[in-house]
Amino acid sequence: MNGPRSWIARRLLLGVLQTAAVVLLVFALTEALPGDAAVAFAGDQPDPQRIAAVREAMGLDRPAHERLAEWAGGLLHGDFGTSLTSGRPVAGFLADGFGPTLLLTGLTVLLLVPLGVGLGVVAARHEGRFTDRLISSATLGVYAVPEFALGVLLVSVLALRLGWLPPTALGHGTGLLGHPAVLVLPVLVLVARPVCSLARLVRAGMIEALAAPYTAHAERYGISGARIRYGHALPNALAPATQQLARTIDWLLCGVIVVEALYVIPGLGTVLMNAVADRDIPVVQGLAVVFGLATVVLNLGADLVTHRLAPRSAVAA
Image 1 (cartoon, rainbow, N blue to C red):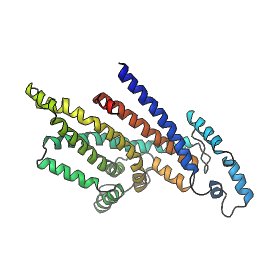
Image 2 (image 1 turned 180 degrees about the vertical axis):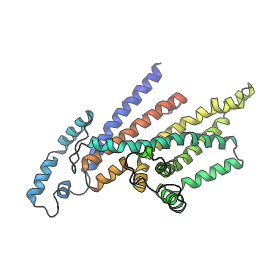
Image 3 (image 1 turned 120 degrees about the vertical axis):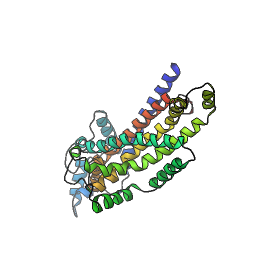
Image 4 (image 1 turned 180 degrees about the horizontal axis):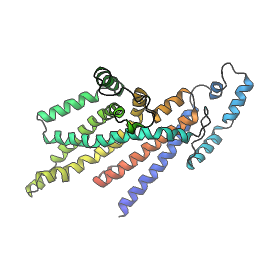
């Protein structure tokens, strides 16, 4: 028991160190942004006294290490700072955009897992035959289309030409669940590429597992093919697929920015774009920390699940 517990403790410690690195990196990158935020907020053709007053109000006249210590201390208590443009707490912006983004991401993952794993298993069972070639060709073709191009294509065909679905979520606010039709196109765009990569990874893992010596040994003992495929081969194929799923969910946090902009969905991506346009540094910092922490947590969870499915992977880790 000491071995697994020691590995989990080391992995949790690594997660804490990664979280600290995320906070430091976000602060350093925002400090390195070009331009002067005080000048931008002082208005058109400001005088030096006005710029100095704005810089003092924003705390930019203080040393960087003091501002970092104050900001990091606030994060430990759930305080992400205050918006420079509106004076609202940054946590309020996060709360406003969290619901739509979580809804899009959750629906995408709910479709992604069964579709990706199912297509991969079907392709592996028919290796080298027409079904395998069809799935492999289709997933490769869809994966090659960027999200923005796919989104524009779906809007042009399904919304504007055929009129089956609304082109955007404009006018629905955050009550997207009450209008499920507006979610179809965004979820299709978000799920398209991840399904392809997950299906191809599961297919490769299943084929490799079914060709392993233990599979032939199990067949000699008379174990049924279904039990070999789903009780032995599939868990070994799902171990690397779990890591891919964590990276995919992490990617969704970036892809959702493009999708929310295209379909006018008021989520975290829209909040981030507005904050960047307004040079609202505290909001940008808060969103960057949230996205970074989500990445750390997802990868930590994926490592723990992978260790459960295939304990030998911990040796490689």
